[in-house]
Image (tube, rainbow, N blue to C red; front, side, top):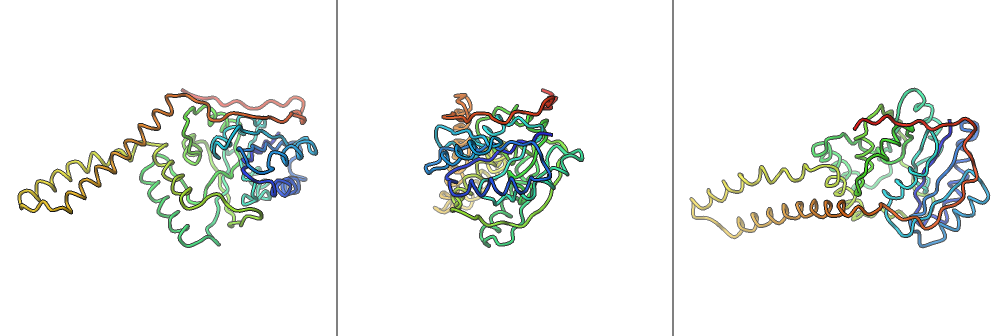
Length: 309
């Protein structure tokens, strides 16, 4: 079965050749027909030039260049839309998603799963990042109506049915971890040890990780709005108690004001996202698309998901 691999890229000029070599080595003897879709997410270095070069040298490598930096989620969506295979893998360009795991993941997928996820261990990670991740996933399990697993990211292999299900979801603010879990289907897992980057520096700083986590909680459900229902009566009762004791206190006023500001901020986030959805702007714009040199094998037809509205 034909395999498509989607690789979002941002300023990865020094790593694309290593990625190509690692993929070719990992798939040799395991997968005969495949394509690699490099999605250049508005890089400011020579990533696009490297993608063009790889495409010219190896017809199995294709590239799509976006008009600017739209973010990893739109770049991933773009790659999924361009994928032609009956099996689709998603992985990063920095080799922190080891290509050597793909054969194992494909074998597991072919046993009847629609998704196979590679869960990353926390060994070698900073203590503060590990602690924040554990806190976040505990919070997510309580707040979201789907289950997120610690260490399960975007590195996975999907059946065509799962890909078509993902592409049928129209929302603008996409949180792939949640969407992967929301579509359901049978999901298998393998685990691997954390792998450091071989080139460059990660763009995932603490502030970016916090923003991404907050986006997931806000974009994927309306649970954060519910505290207002419970806090309202509690605050009213507390205010009444303080009034009866004639101890209003500045601290109490500041606390009430802080709660109000927090809830207004949450509400504002939802209103802003609703406004963005109503504009119906495209998720991304394509600046350049490389030619398709590798054709699908004769008689190959991608499976189509049977979606129930």
